[in-house]
Image: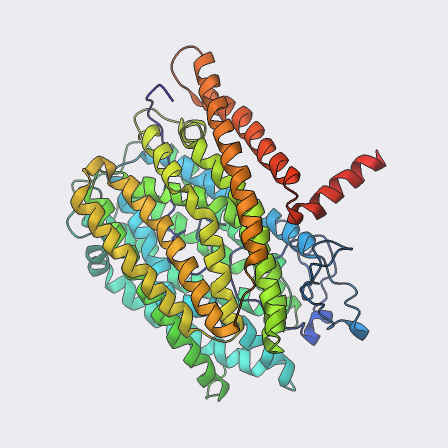
Length: 628
């Protein structure tokens, strides 16, 4: 870009790189899968269950959006096998009735896409309402606290190990695990309730821990928001628990669409906020301020809605909750896994706190921009990468249960290759068109932030999209093997690197460049996680047969670089053609023309290089053209 223009943005208060995403998939299909009663075959596998009040997340026509999914068959499409080994768990080993990986991934992507769009929308409106600066940074930090505490209490366990535990109980117990689930819910509810109350009491301390003394956010305003937002902890827990039970019963629709309801409630809240006369008062901060109460209570109501919208689906499965006390010996196994997950989350929070402190000590608005950039980077992962991971996990879990290492290696390789051909091209275009993307999306209110800042931060960190996806895939491979220890050790290494790089950024870069250093740091730590995970997976599984993956990676990288350069050249050409000051229209022209041609060139080169993972998709397209 040859122009400087200010733009507005929002904050992604929960979509943090350090929190493990998604639920580990169950192993083979539970007998309950045929008893749930949901038969509509058209709708998605779940989006990230712990997805923040944004990110990443109601429900319209819930019955039609619910689907029973059996473990995914090992084919890339309906007719082609990838060689990963068939899952014969279907009748007579035929695997009939199982959706292909592409079909399952595609259906899940619908829910995630809607969730991301609505989450992105409310952040844009938040930026319009409060701009970048002290209010946005303070709200962003305060809205981080509920997810951070929830993850420390129980969230990390729920997102990683609880679904397989519930499935095993359903398969082995005469009551299909109902008593075990009731006992687990009773204990978890009390634990969450106590944790929520203590967190609200400790709100001033938590605010001080996360920001300390800074110019980017005030502890007074952060504390005030925290009092209103921390009750989310309990409802995050209820939502995650219900989602886990539904997924263990092979019901995926309600958990997928519930975060959308959360986003809709927040959008309504912001519409009310904008219509309230005046502005939020910073000096002094008053808990009775109408703006403060509207934003804080409204966002919390979004999480309440996200939890409640799933309850009718839970009742439809036949499950009934009642308080049940006493200890089940299997809770001890669950507790062992939980301790490692608690350590995982605890270590990750250290990295999050470090980045928060560095960002809020720099220019006001830096932490909000950092979160917005991270949310943009998570968009392709959430729509594509997480869809692939969710669809491949049942196969890996089944292979791990059978101790079939070769099949597990094949599935892991398949997931990594599909992520590579789908995410690396997008990463290249985001690198090339960082500023046009920022101009197109954030030119909503003058004086609310620097487009060049957002665009540059996006460009210098977009390389982390694929490493993030592969690191998450590796983590879930360990969880499929019931190994929660190794992911925690990987997170220790990643956090150590993050802390060292954050210190270097804070001490060597000028305040206006700290944002770029932090976004680069965040992405680079996933490269580290990828490499460390590869080494430890080899220790667990032996040779991973990485040759096929490296060939796919090399071809896709070559195509992505060439297409990215082309997209950048076209973007510069369009910028030169448009007269007058830069605007959202200029950004959209650059993005649509440069992005379309760039992506077209990338996939064209990949086709010429015979990237085999594209063949199923190309076959479907050519088949449709032939029919016409």
